[in-house]
Amino acid sequence: MKKIVSTAVLFVICICCNAQITRTFWNFTLGESTRQQVVQEMSDKGYKGATGADGTYNIQFAEPVAYGGFKWTHVSFDFADGVLSYVSFQNKFIYSRMNIGEIYESLKTSLGNKYAKYYVNASDGGTKRYVEYSDDMTLIDLDYYPNDKFVTLNFYDVRLNSEVVEF
Image (tube, rainbow, N blue to C red; front, side, top):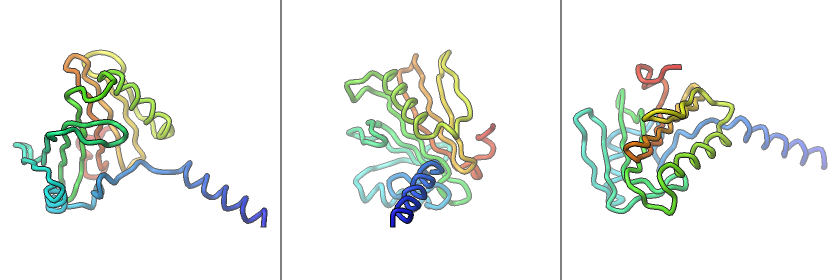
């Protein structure tokens, strides 16, 4: 019996250690969810969006919404080949006790702890600071613009964004 329990625990640990980067956001999945599904579900939740000149579906929230433990003022969804290819959470105003730089550092630490083995690239200087992680299916790009005082947390489907995603 101890052997079975030990084997089960080891199996769960192995699965957790090999966890891939998340591809699902609010019931939407990169590479699967359609524009119609995203627009309808966000509308059902009471959020009104608009399609940008570049084809993205953008929502500016009247009250910031939580994702990943932080408040976000905007979200953008982009589509390729009829399915969700990109999700971007943006915080352009301060809606917490932390300033934007502290939010960036906290998110950077959390992503580093969770996805260290998927680390791709980073820059901590200039007008844009960023860190990237990829499991070859999904790319996470956390950006901080200190001069403009905002943070973005972006998720790309690598296959559908090959022109944007470079390693």
